[in-house]
Image (tube, rainbow, N blue to C red; front, side):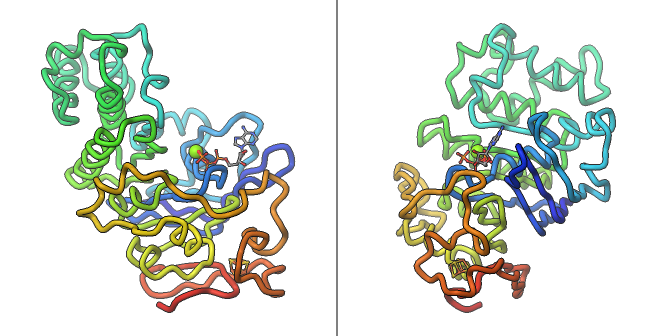
Amino acid sequence: MLEIRDLRVHIDGHEIIHIDELDLPPGARLGLVGESGSGKTMTAKAIAGLLPAEAKVSGTVRFDGNDLLALNDAQFARIRGKRIGFVFQDPARSLNPMMRIGRQVSEAIRLHTDLKGRAITDKVVELLTQVQLPDPASLVRRYPHQLSGGQQQRVMIAAAIAADPELLIADEPTTALDVTVQAEILRLLISLSEERQMSVLFVSHDLGVIRYVCDRVAVIYGGHVAETGSVDDVIDRPRHRYTSALLAANPGMPKDDDFAAFMGQRLHTIPGSVPAVGRFPSGCRFRNRCGHASAACASIPSPVTGADGHRYSCWNPGGED
Ligand SMILES: Nc1ncnc2c1ncn2[C@@H]1O[C@H](COP(=O)(O)OP(=O)(O)OP(=O)(O)O)[C@@H](O)[C@H]1O
Ligand code: SF4
Ligand SMILES: [Mg+2]
């Protein structure tokens, strides 16, 4: 579905992202997790073709056989919003405050499908029903400020899935919402992905949320993939020392049942802060914060791939597969 190879993003001469290899299989939900500033949003934007104008991007992002980075704007426009949908962090800022809800969703349908007239109106109601909004027939006449944050995010999701995309990119879609609403929206995303066989690239700084939503995960640090694999391998059997540090900072990682209880807790951070762009150490980027660093860590660690695509780049890995 999505195959990323040697994806690099440079801004102002600094390499902000270098993803050597990352795959999202069809129908899977892949989480991108890491501390603030680790490069999750930049990676999602590079895939979506939504990087700022000053960014230079190279490598390949193969989506269903096409290299997205080789498409021109017109070609990308036929994929973005149609075959790849997006949901971002803050629904209030993503919705147009002057436009009724029905119109916002119908614009997405008009732009990305062949439906016309009455079929569009019917589709709006169908989508609002699918995202479990109450009384869609009257909701379409309301403006965004007349909806709660959770309802606004459901509207954004309805617009994002209007054209039945094969891939949904969701960047911290629940961070702006209160805890109980977060859990509802996450459940909605999981059920839509299962019903539609829709792949999801899910960005979060929260390993508990990733464990709940995703089947695969990539731990990002300094714009690199430190470790990737199934959620069970990476969270229960971490090899990279950055992953274990993130987990150690967040004890009591919940299994599914405890998720709601866990959601109120804040994410704890690893001692020391993420260096600014251009200030990472050479070799392993985590070297200046790692309790296991050795002389070897001054060189870039070679990736090791184990069973089920469990892949990590660390000279002194913890645990065993
Ligand atoms: N427009 C920009 N110009 C220059 N640098 C940028 C720009 N946007 C982001 N960066 C830098 O790129 C790095 C990665 O940022 P990114 O937004 O991807 O982080 P993130 O993992 O999404 O963090 P958060 O959890 O805070 O959302 C950061 O160091 C950030 O300062
Ligand atoms: S390569 Fe070295 S510095 Fe980097 S995480 Fe592994 S042990 Fe720590
Ligand atoms: Mg971000």
